[in-house]
Length: 135
Image (tube, rainbow, N blue to C red):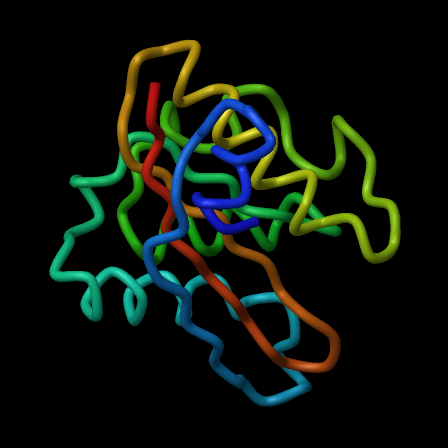
């Protein structure tokens, strides 16, 4: 929701959306979209892999997240600190909301600032978005 609306409703501001990117990869390698979407959104925002405090990388299979982590050189301690889709569940259509709420809560709890959510979407798409915590 817009900041102005949250303030009008006297709701706490947990963070803000910074930027997002969507990519496509060949359907035969479906599941690796985050490995391609994350670098694009970081470049658009003028950030590097190490500038991000927490990554929420959604996975239907553990190998998908591992591939992205290894390909991008992400510190494993920054990835899914409360567990990912395998641990928390993977309800259809709830991935984005679950990732954002988990990310902003964890950034706030740890007094960190920047986070990325990322997921594979359907038959070869990948998406990544950057959020900044506010407290």
